[in-house]
Length: 203
Image (cartoon, rainbow, N blue to C red; front, side, top):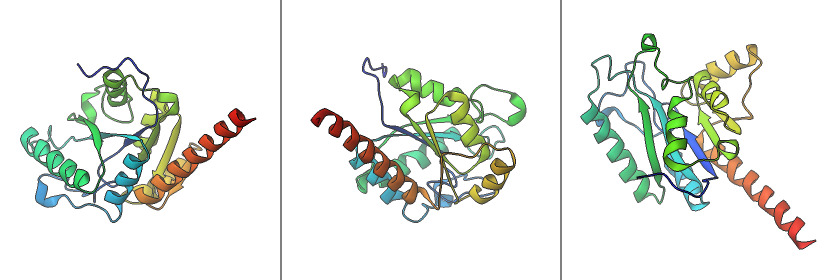
């Protein structure tokens, strides 16, 4: 049973396609189509070494579209995690939605179902957690789930999403060029908060 009694803080939820790896309008259907974005492995390493828990939250409707099998998805994720681990990063878990938009499920982003699944599994303090994504639905999913902080990256669909979010007046807490810069922002902000807590204790 994965549930933990201790409240898990310093959690970073990540979208996958367009954030960690290159996205494709034709979907990522097998491992040969999976290509890491520049510096994404370094970003995952930095977050891991700074004691952040990384959980991937991803829509994978290609499964329901019969373009991707569960076995192929498992292979993609196993290989991805192996390479990230070799680079000193660690992905705690991966939660995915296989449904089509018209299925009206509770787990397809922007609905918060996947984040709630992760919260139940690991007893996550959502108010202190982050969500990094490249789409409007990523940011809205985090907000719908009650995550404390959101970051939009300009890779993938990020530039288009930024314009849409601006029009909707629902901008994320920070906009970063890519996952690496997003990780630096999170780590720097956490260090600043830690310093402030230490200063209060010192006095």
